[in-house]
Image 1: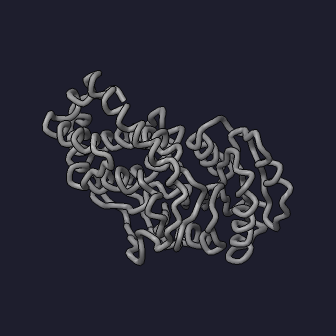
Image 2 (image 1 turned 135 degrees about the vertical axis):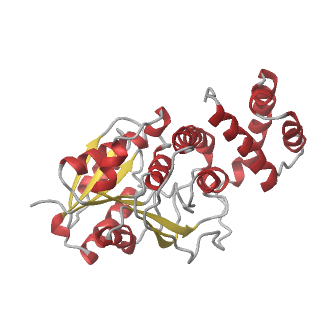
Image 3 (image 1 turned 45 degrees about the vertical axis):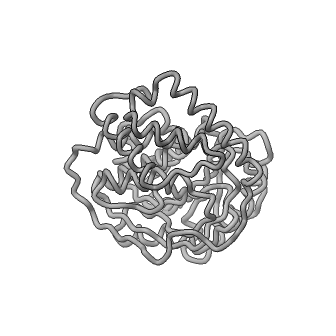
Length: 330
């Protein structure tokens, strides 16, 4: 029987959460669609825990399959896109494997608009104030400043895609970091630049596993992929498709849950060390003007550094301007 809907779940060492996510996806497909025409595909980057075994041993009404893919979230998702096109699957979606708050109606929200002419669905939800830092401080400002429309959660992780969009996406130039955590911003930027029909879907509260410990690595990958893609589109005349933004809620939830507090001190020390190192090497003089460097340095040396939104926006704008004017080694 042909597959009409496929849900991809990229994973790496997610034995703790994969079963819950799988069951919610299965329930969503059973409740809102004909699950007999659906497939759940686990794209595992060769986990060294029980992720794949748990996925395969969990009973579901929907057919499921697990494949081993090369390391990197981007590689896993690109594999999934090629799989969907090869098997002529018209509607598909991806969800993260570490979700604690996913519900069956998330699947409906991501997939259903695709049957109504939309090519790309992405989430709007509330999050813990210490989550989504890369979105709030880089991805959203980048899209808002460079593109003729803003998407509030361009790195959401939960997306829906039409086959028309996937065909376009696979042909677009990719930075090496796109094959890692830079994949989400690659997708969102190309959805806008390609003139596709985009719909934001409100999913409520998002809770996932703590990720603050690898925020620096993730930011680097998102940053490099994002400025590479945005430079390609910077002077392109973009004709927007149908854009349906959702303003129901997109902000901070009221929970005081703070799982990252115990590593804040270590990260601040690391920030100061690296700032001084990069200053001595001359990176900042090359990419940022002297006045901005002094302003940032005075804050970094403070016991509790707190960059204002205006200062951060100025720094980001200067870096992007210089990158668009000439190639930077990033």
